[in-house]
Length: 225
Ligand SMILES: C[S@@+](CC[C@H](N)C(=O)[O-])C[C@H]1O[C@@H](n2cnc3c(N)ncnc32)[C@H](O)[C@@H]1O
Image 1 (cartoon, rainbow, N blue to C red):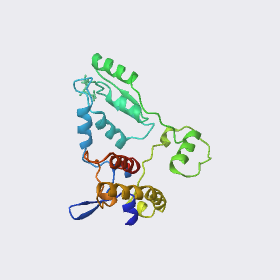
Image 2 (cartoon, protein in one colour):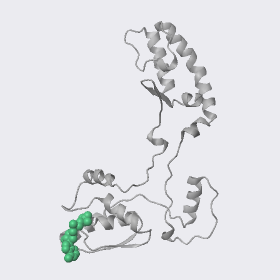
Image 3 (cartoon, rainbow, N blue to C red):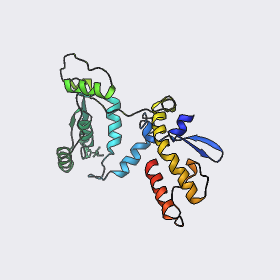
Image 4 (cartoon, rainbow, N blue to C red):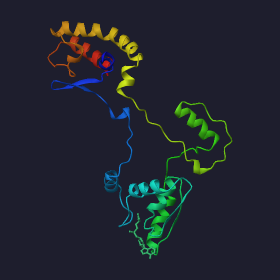
């Protein structure tokens, strides 16, 4: 509990103690069978074709039903969302339309698309990258650049309450900053005639404070931010 406090992970709501957990602690969520993410993404994307499907919808279908290197067929191309998304996820594709307008739009869209670049898992550079992001030893087996083995994906951290509570480095960091902050707190209290504990020091300095108190508060804010 002391470490959680030192790591500024404790707060309160009324009389209830709460844990501060930023989204970045674990910026990951498994897809559920409610596709509410597609609605939001669909509205946000400008359409090039009046009946264009949201890329997120096609993306979910492709990810569910195929693997990298598979062939995806869409016989109702429209502005080419299926081909565009298939390309993004390392799938091959064929798409068909009776309308020349649709095909012209699709061609321009696919030719002009830009995608993030991924390393193949079945490649020397991919194996080295995988070792780097996973913290494991690199695998030194032969590589065939077979796309079916997929790609090297980014990792997100997964920080739990337990990780913070067991992280002794927090104590070292806290001691270091405490040695700087404690004299500041005492001087500020003396200047403004208060007995504030560190969590009670206001975020904003009072305009009526003397310049010395303002300077101490600026220093406090800079060190704690
Ligand atoms: C709803 S749109 C597809 C939209 C597409 N998913 C997109 O994101 O743009 C249907 C498309 O199918 C095409 N189409 C209709 N009948 C067809 C047929 N018999 N053969 C091939 N394409 C056809 C239309 O020209 C139209 O572009």
